[in-house]
Length: 145
Image (tube, rainbow, N blue to C red):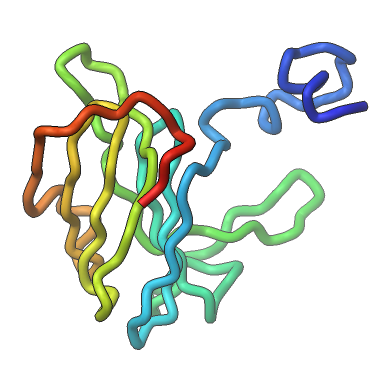
């Protein structure tokens, strides 16, 4: 079964989770910090997730959180931190087009579909936006930073 067929919903062989828009990732950034972190962003849900690569199946950073379990009982990776999705005036989440990190990995610059660039502190990602900039227009996911 082709990926295009599954995306259109044809063939009936895909699972709901595999076809769910909340599962999409539009940007991945490796953070050059002591924590060996990876930041990912969602194309439709607008959430940014921080992952500890040294602990791919636990909550990481020494917090002792258990990993999620799949139906088969295998461990699933669990993000260390998750932001609240970008929500616009309409009340719906705005997807993330692309991200970039500063050289130290301590700040993330995030370009979202609501045509805003937001800055996040990676040490306190869940606290939300540090600064926000406007003045450009986002029309496509094909142009990346």
